Length: 233
Ligand SMILES: NC(=O)c1ccc[n+]([C@@H]2O[C@H](COP(=O)([O-])OP(=O)(O)OC[C@H]3O[C@@H](n4cnc5c(N)ncnc54)[C@H](OP(=O)(O)O)[C@@H]3O)[C@@H](O)[C@H]2O)c1
Figure 1 (cartoon, helix red, strand yellow):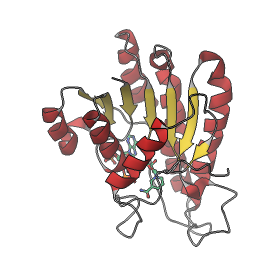
Figure 2 (cartoon, rainbow, N blue to C red; figure 1 turned 180 degrees about the horizontal axis):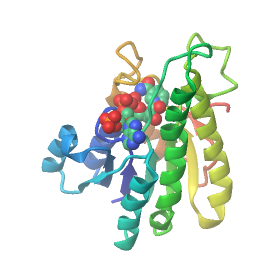
Figure 3 (cartoon, rainbow, N blue to C red; figure 1 turned 180 degrees about the vertical axis):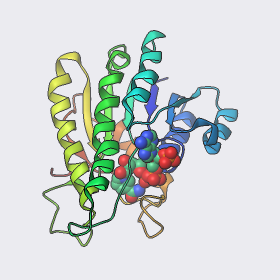
Figure 4 (cartoon, protein in one colour; figure 1 turned 60 degrees about the horizontal axis):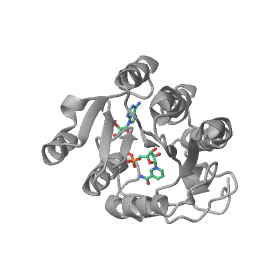
């Protein structure tokens, strides 16, 4: 049984990751901004005693520190961390406001960094710790120009920056045995992805978990698609 921390787990991909990982016998620490209102998570908790719901707003440093300081003080380990919490603004280069850019960066990049840093004491307690940053093909600089999608400037920049956090994190944390990868879930039917998306959330999560299952035990500092193929940065 692994202990898995998932940010933004009250809906969408985070909720489905929680559900499938519990079903396969793991312990899940599920971060949610507002546990009292996280009805789907609370319903899951009635089914699985290995689910713990923790209050966590990734864009607020106090919240991140208090969540992980508590876990560290209890000597808890985390084998797998999903930096999943994310937001999007679809505005393009002409429309995007500085405030929105800051808000998207605060959650998608700064939040991921704060969570990664605060979770290190718990990750070090694992024999094979892995950090998975939920990235996006929209964050691939190489893929720009090859797709109809695009224009969500703040989101795209934040995911490209998240990919750099993956790469630098993999290098900096390698001496501690902590691996870091970026993983794209594909285009998924959630509030963020919209109803036209390619995947049902269950299918995307199934593919991502299969990819992680088959991951080279040394893999770190790479950017993968849901089905396991490498995406160019
Ligand atoms: N759906 C797609 O097609 C797609 C494609 C590529 C990448 N992704 C990435 O996959 C991840 C999950 O996306 P999704 O589609 O599941 O989105 P979603 O359905 O909109 O869910 C986002 C989750 O993140 C949480 N969240 C947002 N800001 C937060 C914050 N500051 N602190 C803590 N939690 C926060 C939300 O909590 P609240 O309920 O409290 O708002 C919610 O639980 C994101 O990183 C996204 O960029 C998604």
